[in-house]
Length: 301
Image (tube, rainbow, N blue to C red; front, side, top):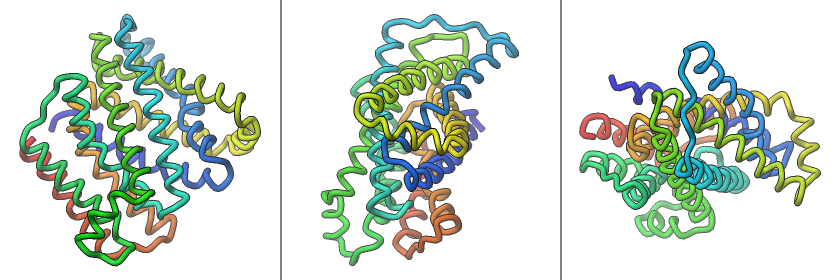
């Protein structure tokens, strides 16, 4: 089994845990605060990863360059935007459906990978993305009267457009992070991913801290009062991000994010067992299609 596969599966699981905890934090702070904690409280863990690789494993620091810095900025801003939109969605629909809208990310990552990096994907990857996205569309209309017209028109509703925008921003950030990590050109994929994560998460923390000081100082107090769960979010979020960065250094972002659709399975488990929300047959069918898309990806990529 190629290394990027188990790394991606682990990252998808950790990301689901982080998203579930962020939804919980949304009850005690605003969208800005719930977005910030994944970055601000992840900084010490990101720096720890770099220190371990350098001091314990003996990997030298790569030399940053202008291309690396630019891609980090693009990826960092895009990820903040995507996370903000995704958390905002939790206010409108249940946890599984809110997450589903952003799961068009693989298809968009494939497009941005082609536009920005000149990367193409195989017919098998395109088929896998199409199957998974159709599964996401089924999930998106699971709580309305189902018709084919509803399936298509649902894409143009307010919640769908917010989710699609989130998926766009996530797709851009995924491609940008792959480009940033590859721009370091060594010493190895682990160190490239760790340094990219540390630089990006520091940039995001500074950017969001400045925004809150300027526009929403009361949110800082709410974050401080919830520091314990926020610290856990930071640990899980930084670990998930390290997994994503590592996997996307080894493999195209679109392929990694296609396999990452397995997160929807973890999301449904969270929906049923933690948030006590019901799911219906359309959501189950969509979940099955996502699994089929993943199997197609692994078989024909």
